[in-house]
Structure formats: structure tokens, C-alpha cells
Image 1 (cartoon, rainbow, N blue to C red):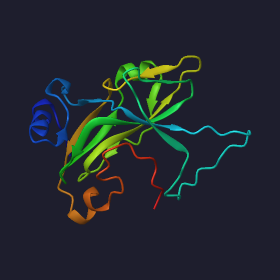
Image 2: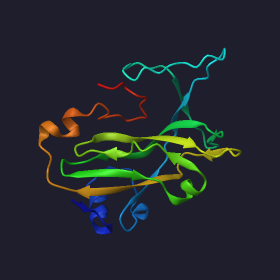
Image 3: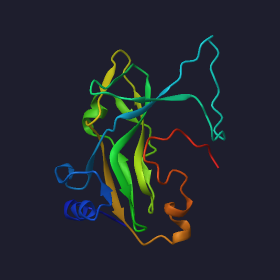
Image 4: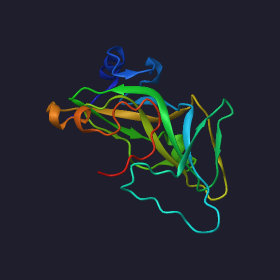
Amino acid sequence: MSLLSYNQLKDLLDQNVIEGSKVEHINAASIDLVLGNVIYLEKPVYGGVPAIIDMLDKNANHLYRVEMGEEGHVVPPGGTVLAQTVEVFHLPNWISGDYKLKSTQARNFFNHLNAGWADAGWNGSVLTLEFVNHNQYHSVRIKPGIKCGQMIFFEHEEVPVEASYATRGQYNGDKETTPGKGLK
């Protein structure tokens, strides 16, 4: 397995493997990603009794959809946001990717919850991002169009079609942020 660098990443953009990205977003060994305008927020629970999310429920109903305007959205201390990239990915069966924070996000204690792996064959989808504001006293404003992280890519032996995310992935083809579809 080898990490892809600038010229290889540029080739991925030229081949439209990463649709909607720009050459100026290519770094030495990563591509900066841009925040889209659709987010999902947690529904408030009233009455003091915490609700339960069933991890097997394919129709969990604890989030609601918001389209951010240019003013963005303010994430309060401890708040969470399900967001998406502008970029749409069309990974072949020999390339996988991994989402990483930008250092500015980390230095502002705005974190991602580690579900950023993109398996070979993942295609026709935006990347869904699971953000949390770890600040104790400060809110964080996010806006559509800001750099929201970066993706690194690995080239590896081709995955058989039956093992590819294109065949097995439940989030393949998601053109918008998608709440959890339940564990299989």
C-alpha cells in the first residue's frame, strides 16, 4: 500500500475520481475538503428523560435536516453536527481514503469522530462528517465553503468486486449527508 502524493492526487482530480475539488486544494499528500451546506442536528428531548438510539434501527429519528445559509451555523459547547463535503467521491477498487482534521480545527477543539475511512469502490457519494465541539465555554461557527478537513489516499492491490464497497456499502451513492442507517 502506498500513500498518494501531489502528482497522483492531481491525476485523481483530472480523472474526476474526486468530483468538485480544485487543484489549489491539493497539498503534498492530501486534498483539502470543503464543507457543504446541508447539516443534521440532534433533536432536543424535553421532560428530562434521555431518549435512546437503537443502533439496529434503520429509521432512527433523532436528527433533523438544516440547510445552512451563508451565515453558517453556531455549534455550542458539547454540540454535535452531522455535515457533508462538497466533493463527491468515485473511488476505484484499488484506492481507499482516510479523512483527517485540519490543524486549525484541532486547535479550536472542533473534532471529528473517526468515521472517515473510505473503502475502495465507494462511489457517487459525498463524505459525511461527524463533528463535535469539545470547547467547554466557546461556540464554534461553521459555514458552507470553508475547508473542513483533508483526505489522504492509498493505492493498494485491487479489491475483488464482491468485496468492494461498490457492492457491499450501505452508504454508496449518498449525494447528501445521511443519518445512521443502522448496523447490519
